[in-house]
Amino acid sequence: MDNLSSALPVVASRRCRRQRGFFAVSLLLLGMPLAEAAALPSDMPHFQFELQAQQHCPADAVVWVVANRGLYNSSSERWYGRTSNGTYACLADAERAGYRASSPASAAQ
Image (cartoon, one colour):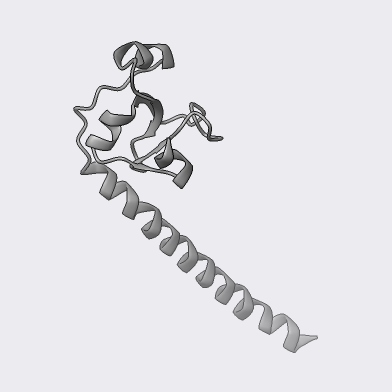
């Protein structure tokens, strides 16, 4: 019984160190796309409502731009208009500003 109780703090401390390492690596990985997104131009016209974007570019497709990831979603995708940190924009403007499609289906449209 004595050996078991003395081994528990060692196991717990190893587990904590592993978890701290995991979280540190996760934060590094999450930070990389954010740094890249900061370099994207912000002069692209973006809109709060889909109708505003459609009126701005009636001949072009409207996409949902997620600025901090550097991606856009087309209207057929699940996250179109659903993330809290995105805006509507014209497809040509988004591509000219350096945003890329989140999936091959977005690029085909």
